[in-house]
Image: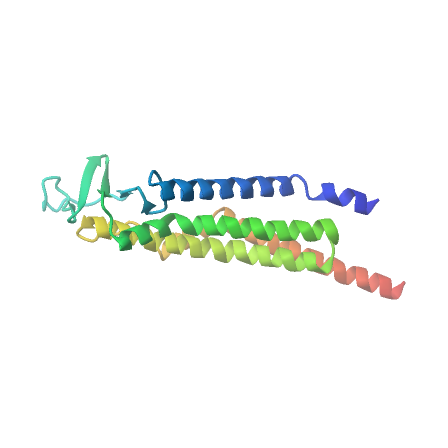
Length: 217
């Protein structure tokens, strides 16, 4: 009876995991094909300019006609419409790499998260929700959510800072590789990771109690 119920035990999370995995694969494939054909891009590579918008506010220094001392570097232009929007129509290889690193950490994070979820669900479906490997899978998932989200936020902040500083002068920086990961952890990732670690501990204690009952029985 239990074996018959296990395939449904992992729903609807398993179906959602597969759905997001297929969607990410299609998006990546479409981007790669359009970049290869010369009509699209993957990150900063392909037929695309490198553009970023400054979200911070600046004090008036009187160093330029706009009154805030921000000027475009050679090869870049700046539009002002509430925020400063800087673009490089012909970006350098370095700009392309850093621009790609702005978005790719979150993509890698989600790809790894989906893979870990699939591994955990496979264990629950084949071995049962209280099998010893289940606690290990939950523990790995929890630590990955906490550490992975922090690393992704740090790389995103550093890459954004490098791109901004390559587009405008003086170097002002807009990303935050230090406090960005901390702010990122103060919401869903920290709670979700802590929940996985707690459930892993609960399952581990339950397994120990079950072994004691069997030994005394």
